[in-house]
Image 1 (cartoon, rainbow over the protein chains, first blue to last red):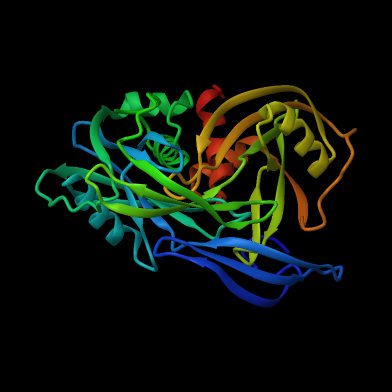
Image 2 (image 1 turned 120 degrees about the vertical axis):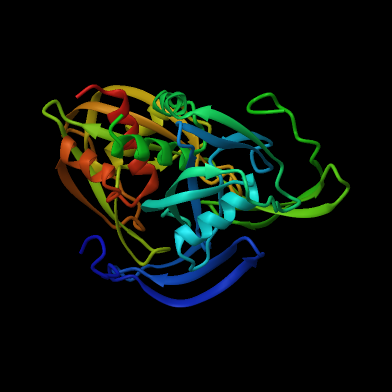
Length: 184
Length: 184
């Protein structure tokens, strides 16, 4: 009855509808009958997912983004990231890193995939590491992206993540996952 | 112009409306004028946030939950967690741990707070560690919660998180944050 065995826990979806849709997210509402016969309505975000990139130079520096986040009304320090819709995470990572930072990377590694908010969204994030950066890409940001780049020493950034100071959850997870995997 | 200084990046909200609302989430839509004069519509999830609990026994075992997640159509292994609406994370953590698992804890520590999906949600998660569990609480689950408990050795679970096998992002972040903070 657990992970990945396809068991639907006896939840039966009787009807499904879209209650909101934009190019960025869709809100889906299902009429569901629970195993005990109760009938409920379950609403969740249908989202194509995204890739988050930890871009590291040969000499151990990371390029991060200060992004203005309208839902928070403030700037947040984040790893470069971008939408993914059925694409290979590394293919999407290459494009997003180049478009947002102007950098390309020599080697790419997929560290893992995670569900972001499983209770009310099917959104999945893929974490990739990009190594060997070169500044020969072409910036191509969307006009709604208010972004400023800042370079950090990798060790400093990981130490900030350990202290809980990287407030963007996906970026903190990417940094701590990388640190846990990589002997330093 | 960066984190936490209150700068709004010159984004001006002209109007705001609710396009969907349930007891669990609200979808807010704002009409925004960007610094370059462009007028856009920005839609995001308004969510009260939640607390996620890493519950550890004196002898280094953790109680985890297999939860059926309708948005994914599958079971996911997660740390106990629950809604938070302006509450102290530890107060909410005590309640959620007891209601979902029947356990109480002798000591509590707040490890950090994180934004879950800053591009389209203002949702924040608070990570707390609960130590010294005793099985003297009272279960009180919502009828939409399909949950089965499973015990793990803490070291085994952290190793699984390091390998990217804990697919619930908040749980993976809680485990890796705890591991990074705690000499073992």
